[in-house]
Length: 133
Length: 415
Image 1 (tube, chains in turn yellow, cyan):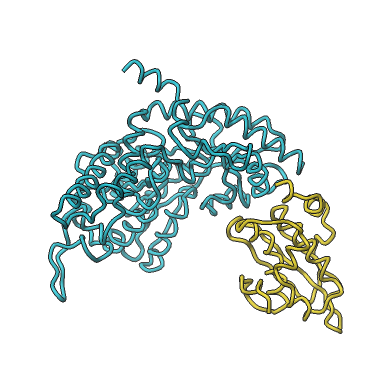
Image 2 (spheres, chains in turn red, green):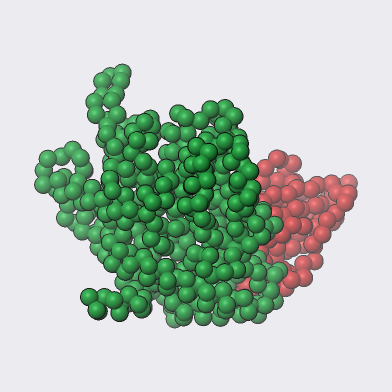
């Protein structure tokens, strides 16, 4: 457990750097984890070259999902949408640096599902989005 | 006898009867199980009964003439009789084995409901229903064009009986409600609700999943038409539950699933349904589980439901007192321990229930976090999720102390 709530998780949860809304935005997508009711929205601004210039998340959730969203958005600034499509769940778990059981894995991966659904412009965030291309 | 009375006054002995309670969650961290409202742990006697069935008499029931088939049939039907007796039912044929409370409610919706409810008919539920007593009626309402109405829940977690009285003017055909809330712990005045419903000619279904495990219930005195419950919340195995219904009603209902055992006679194009209770038990049932269910009610009977209720009430009172001192805590449900069952749900200001449950787990304390299959009720209280500690006969004051200690750690980490 102490590994699960590493300092970086608690720090990001308490003081997220990318929490907020971007209005207007180029991409906005929201969804929830029906298991726990966590709800996250991700807004992106994309420049003319198709590179993400700004990102923000809003909504509510547990420390794992919030820290995951914050770290994920930090990592996508300056990336192209094409590169975002290639982010795998392993990439995100590496960012978090924690081992998760099947239940909490859903919390950690929710932001990635939402980000990818937004980037792909599809209606629903599905688990299939978490698999590598 | 004197020995058994002193045993009963102090339920400490119970813990020893439950093998899983002896385990450590991880080295040096003993299990503190506070999630019995999700599923209860099983005593040695229940595990042994099922083990013995498989080792000694495994056979299919109601058909074979060999010794094992006879013994298995007798054990299965004896379990039915004891479970019926446990809830005050005289005629065991009125007790149908199902998979769980959910299946019992679906059975009523799909057989009685389909045959008797017409477009525009009103079905009254409550805002505190578990999804198992919401979704089956939503499904039937969509198919039949029924009108669903809900008895509201007040801020303290009680049903608003005045609004219920007004709803009764709609002349509902059915009032289906939860006896004890799995989130708030509220014990609803079942007898009064049933009496009022009957006053306007409505049928009644009682979801007793949380109540039958925790206090003595006589379903015939309650005068409900249907009562649904599960074995696994009352020390029995998963995969088996029961539906009790009045015989005349059950006899007039169409069967639920078709197949073996539910028939008297089958021709290529037609069949004749079997007598009760087999009419509703198509296919090979959960035989070992029924036997385990029987052993579970034997165990509860040997301890005594009055004793269990008293024990749990004192635990809830202690837990409420201790937990109310935790900074930032909001307890859900009735403020009086007497009005509550052995369930205590809460929120901690600014801390997500999943994080609470995870940190508690690190201390070995097992609680439930989420919406507990009651999303509309959480909407009602404008919360996304809650954390729930629930108690049973094998819990004691030390478990509450562990919970409080765990919550201190949560606050230290996130506060």
